[in-house]
Length: 135
Image: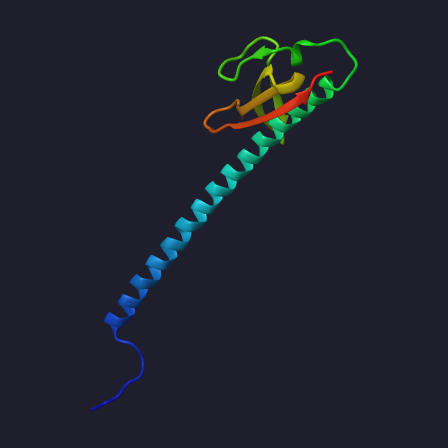
């Protein structure tokens, strides 16, 4: 009997099939990771745009000026209401922001801000709520 080192053709083919499945799974994970990263970036940008609007409204509420349309009760989150929506650019992406102002406890104003991408196919939205002390 002659002993030779190495692998048979069948063993080599089985090893290649197993290896190719592993490579395909790795490529699929990379693609999913890129999608998740893009979605996380979009969610962060929407949150930043909504926070920017909330900070603008907080600054208006803290001034000694007469009440303006921005902190008067009204607005809506489901459609563009005049004086209660705008657009914002965050890192080159444009978002629509809508806000609603309601009476809050003890003379405060409850403000809700909803932000979503202006350009499809991006989807999703961010919504923030806060109370403003209205002087």
